[in-house]
Length: 183
Image (cartoon, rainbow, N blue to C red; front, side, top):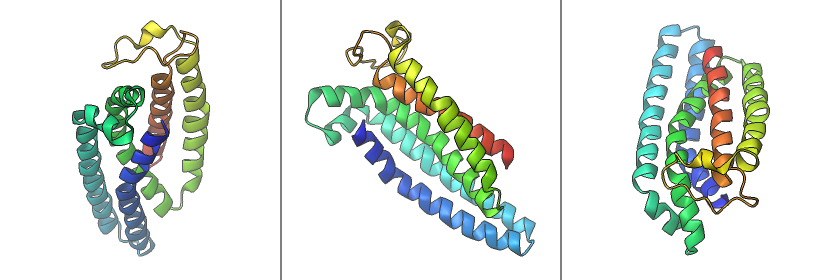
């Protein structure tokens, strides 16, 4: 779990660069009331972010088996890594959209919308959904998921680590939807 967060942080460094440069350029054009250039910056940033997000998504999904080998020599960790790679990889594309919309809102001085999106999505949705999915739903709910590891639940209930990550994904989806509608 911690290894995947570290991997995501490394992969996000490119997104942070795209996000920061977008915020700076967009803020410059908005300050000069040059809307045509501002739209060009947003389109360019969205294209680059989508390309990077899709590249990471495809890599993590295609290299599911190898991801565990990079993280640990422990077979159980490798198995959990295999389970998480498709979900984390698929969610990364959504994260690319999230960073782009956040850049636009910051450049437009609409940080209040980001706060609302985070409170609702990351705290109001992600935390309770992750808790319920990880510990309280019937474990058979995870049977649909490819590479499902069923042994990671303490009480035999819930989806374990998969439930935690699904909760995070749902929360960030809600956050991204709120941010996108605010743009």
